[in-house]
Image (cartoon, rainbow, N blue to C red):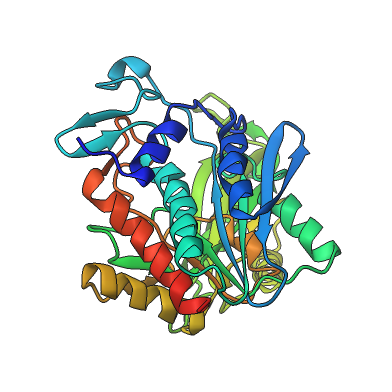
Length: 377
């Protein structure tokens, strides 16, 4: 098999068992490749997390490639057909934890920059890399730390491409121009425990909460917009038993989550939930956790440059989508007006025998290079 530079770098990264938050030397290797290209590299460590900020050039516009070197745990190793941290080829696919999410994208970004700089040393603007080892974990000491640092010292990002695996069925068929926010709540409805044969001496929190929960489930929180379906409220867990069938429980605990679009705000959603609960006159506590804000990049320079690159390389008219979970794009969008995610197919991510089709690796690199050519002529 003829190994391209992108494939070789992908295999090098896959062999490093960088289970979150341990970078395992991935970023050190990236620095060894980026510094000879003229990048000034900074390592920012925080609570066991390793972050890399690298920049070449000082002029605008600044195009940043963002991603993560950490991977999720392997799961039962004995269920893998080949060792998860030994890059293995079978049937035209490259197997290994992180192959799809997202070490191939990182390798493609680096090699794309190398080729672009060799062909266009006098290009306009600047190029940056923002790489973390805390995307698959709590995400408290990773990209958000670097973004806060850049904001504090006044560095402006103009465009950012996050290399998340966004393609659905084939390379290039889908890019993400936004992600939903995530707002979680833990609702505790208070009652009075008692014998089920004497309900007049107890206060059943399940009965008290049921009408309010039904109203919350039926509520239309927003109508969505051009890029988002309507916001969804979902219960993920409900518990209200004392462990015996003849006891009215003293409390009911409900876990719920909003996956909300830019058509709503987390402040507005919280206020409306409290208004519904208060209207039903129940005694409750409610603890909120904002897991991530939504972000949206409308069609514009970055999406057009990437869509054009995909079309030129693959012949595919790509689809803009905001489906899926949260990503580090939510942090970058706070300091960058245009954030787009694009990478290989995502069908095997986080699974046993994670893999990428080898035929997609160099075209992914070429798409990244073409995007550079479109934005930094």
